[in-house]
Image (tube, rainbow, N blue to C red; front, top):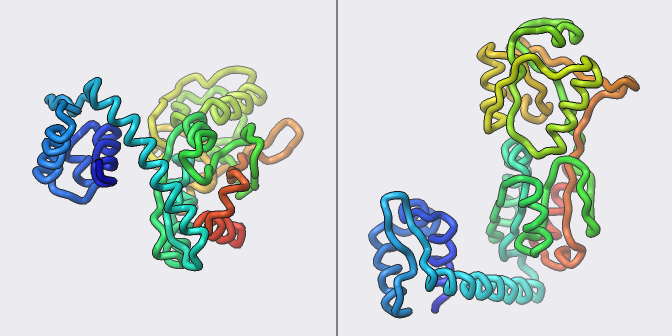
Length: 289
């Protein structure tokens, strides 16, 4: 198998869709289909079943995929070791990051980084905190950027503290929200964030919200609030593009009168700093702090 065959197998298994896989591999769908047929002919076994719902990997395909992943990891490790010997910064930077950070904080950081190091390829993985930490533990990524204080025994740096604000298009005293009939709009997040919000609410109102709407994405939550469907508690980083006259932002306080913040951390293994593309990224975000 060639390195292109390895990436073909991995991409098809991840996307389970010929069109999406073709887009990721920058080839046409017919060309990708022909490459898959050629690989199946070379292997002597069908690797994927084509169905109306997408691609289903076969038992033979699972065996090939497991070897392909190991070969890709070995290949990338070889490139990284070679890169250490070179003066120019290149290679691949792999980052696992929470969705909120990827959406609002990361883009300008990456813009500056790729401008400074144009030869570096950047791979971004988003997901739940458990998925991100698993990728870091399994050495599938070089760095992880996570919200909330995580149990991690490697290197950990505080990137920023994000204030949590109650946002609404209507003006209310904070105490009014205990009896308010309009829904509390929440977005799906990890359990730590959900518990933080629920604990604050119960601490102040000694009850749960009367009405709730739960949406998948923080941006959907924000748009629901902007259109007057209810109120929400959102991190300030998600509100940088919202004009003050469109949304009323109320700071939240604990019983000890401390404002409510949520921290975001950078996690990595010390050995990752041996890679110049990783060192360059960490130095660039330290300057931003």
